Image (cartoon, rainbow, N blue to C red; front, top):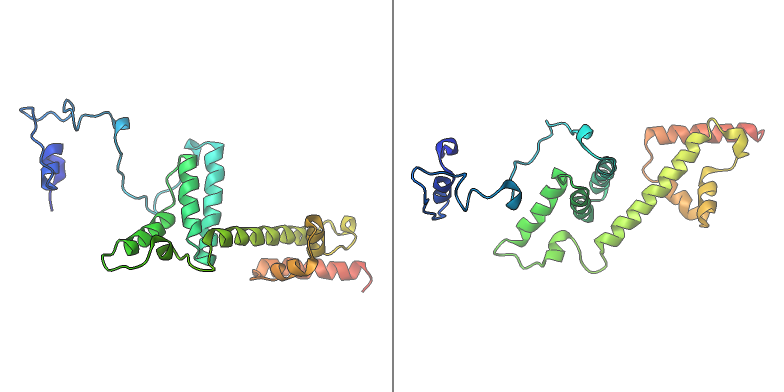
Length: 217
């Protein structure tokens, strides 16, 4: 293992077979025309962050905080679907917001590139990402987004039903949301029943019991 701390930059470059003859004696990295470039004029390399580090929200703008909320959501959706479009989306939105892309997204995309760059691979980059005939990752991603949004709105109405039952006149949450969107309630009923959490099941059971009681059933 090479101890870089005691070396000049050009000595380190030589270690990686980069030939550079230092014009200064003794070496002066700050005055060097190659390695003395101002920091903002060349790439800055840093170690990947670890889960031991905390996010510094105080140093972020409101837009960056909102972006982080979205990135957390995309990470959850990726775990549910394994759709790599969420990884691509996370990297793009993080870069647009001026924050470091989440490590899970970088690792996932890195694995795709690793498979694609194998000398023996015969698959195209689309295949490595998981695309193929009848499988459009982007369309599937936005369809999943829509279903999650519908479920969230339905759950909000179930939760409101515990306190706002009298003003709701006993209207069912699924019908309420489907009517708002001008859609068939049967399709929304199917979405509403997908993978319910214990809290969601409690909200719905409580809501429906109140609805039945208020109707005298």
